[in-house]
Image 1: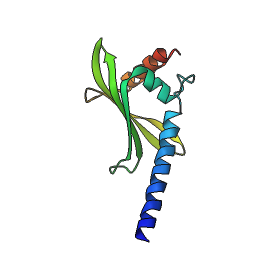
Image 2: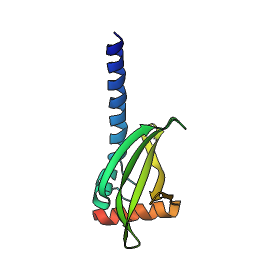
Image 3: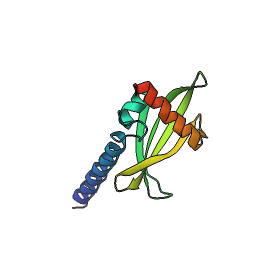
Image 4: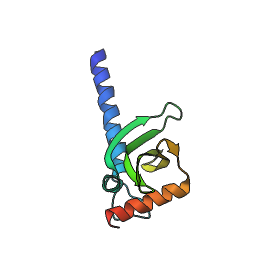
Length: 120
């Protein structure tokens, strides 16, 4: 009986996780409505890797994508962290280059560059 309950809990968790990943990946930025987030990331990042989790700090759902981008004509490691705000709303919670947090201006520039890279 315990195994059945555990399997139901795991299935439910992964189903919700998958739905939240999908909400973010299929979403779009206001500045770039022509392409969804996943398309933008895949056209801009080399070797993007996605990972989602619920943060123990704030109990919010996060979806990270890491990969390589070009910054200042050099390859760098980048991370974008998306955060679910509830009600199918999400936002960029963090943008890092080589482990250093970037400001809102850099986030806006990133979105602009990803849109340009995807042909928007």
